[in-house]
Amino acid sequence: MTSTTHPRLALATLTALASLAAHAEPNVTVYGRLNASFERVSVGSGGSRTEVVDNASRIGFKGTEDLGGGNAVIFQIESRVRVDGGDAVALASRDSFVGLKGSPGTLRLGRTLGPVYYATYDYISMHNHDSGHSSDALLSMATMGNSTAAGGRMNNTLWYTSPSVRGFTLDVAYALLDEAPKSTASKQTPHHLGIVGAYDQGPLHAALSYASTQSTTNLDTDPAVRFNNDRAITFGGAYTFPSFVLGGLYERSTKTTLGDEKSRNYFRLAAMVPMGAHEFHANLGVAGDYSDTSDTGARQYTLAYNYNLSKRTKLYAFYTKIDNDSAKSTGGGGAYSFMSTAAGIDNSAIATGIRHNF
Figure: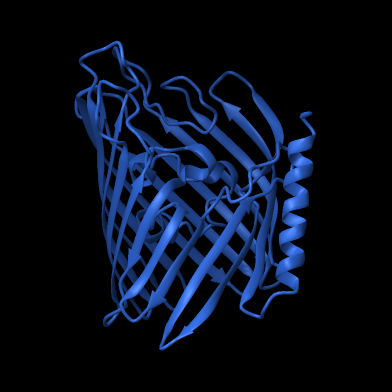
């Protein structure tokens, strides 16, 4: 199979699904987002580059089948697409699942980001939901199964959402990150557990979450291989005032490498001021030092502006900077980056873009 066959096959599959959806019952919806930006990225004193960036563009198909008695089947197939000419992405690369919804709650089976991200980090990502290099570079990967592939989504996920009781809901998600142990030295299968208690009432959203991602290192030749457990406890929320929106979160996370645990604190504040079609945004994230190493923290600053051309289309611009602690000691230096740079190196980007939802 030639290198051009995969993109053509993916395009043909999406076209076929769109055609089926167009002739299906009214409970099937075709939706998506096209989002691209023109960015100037700088890395410390190592120079800069200019690029067109696709920002999580996607196409999806979702719907329900009414089973009667207040029960329904729910389903979704969502795929990443790229408008910057990048490589094709596999079908169902984003949140894709099938499930049941009724009076006891909602149960999903499939591939998702899980409830912890959506109830905390994503909820306060008011600027274009973290477009391009302005995305949150400091959050703990434990909340998403330690995966950065395809946006950190987790395969083999079972996700339950309770009914809302006076604004309170409970979410529990369990994901098998592999379907078998990664090495013969460990008999345990890597997995993720996410638990969220959330409150939504009027202008207030608040959530408290716990995430645990347990994984092994594939070291069959090393009898000392450890079953690592990365954890994060997060509290976050947002409140809509008459003239502005204010959001924030606090996270205490622990990461483990071959049994060596390191903990840190992280908080983020976000504010949005809407004025007609205009939106003004400011974000601040601060990651503290890891417990065993000084000078390993960082700060991320973002200023942004959105202009809403319509309910579905907006123009935007932003400036963001990751200010890493310099490497003053062995093992030191903040290691946060959207450019995969060495520890202690700052990153920044200035961009303008357009986003359209359909």
